[in-house]
Image (tube, rainbow, N blue to C red; front, side, top):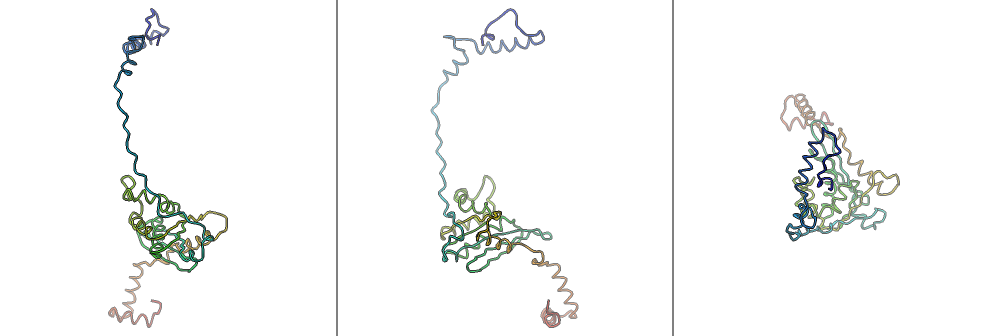
Length: 262
């Protein structure tokens, strides 16, 4: 600052830089010139500026705890609890021009398997639907969910209240599977629900890993298991011609007698 405020006859700068340096020096001198008690005028203006009272914004309401609690390993369940335990999984696969999805819920104690299929959704949606159908099966009552999806597990045990308080929106976008999450929110208030993350990549043998692999295998989509409406239509036309262009009922009756595989 002393260099700026002083006016020496010569400056320790090259001739090419002199005009530019002197211009900036005059500019700073005009704004940093000293006032009373040697205080820079610029500093004094800042110090004399009126101070406003701080504005305190109210804290956003913190969402409550999720009604879904973290569960425990299947081996730690009682026999009665095991009757209401479901290992859930889902998958999706492009077959032809359609996206096929499949959701599976498996109860190791009762050996019951719930299966739902559809089109146009992702594997993440299928995994969530597997949870939805298990909860629906147990309503009203307790339900112990096992899933290898952290998105589903954290959604149930952590994020669900936050999503609900924001109408299941994240900024301008809907939460994935919004329609299912909305129904699940209502369900978990009628059921005693827990969720446990079954690690599908753990090398340790456990009942959780075993039963999760069963659900995973059941949720796989095979092209052979998906009916092709075009091939069925061709088969129906062929049967119709072979039967002499009979009506629908006669074609069906004739085909069942002659071609039992149709």
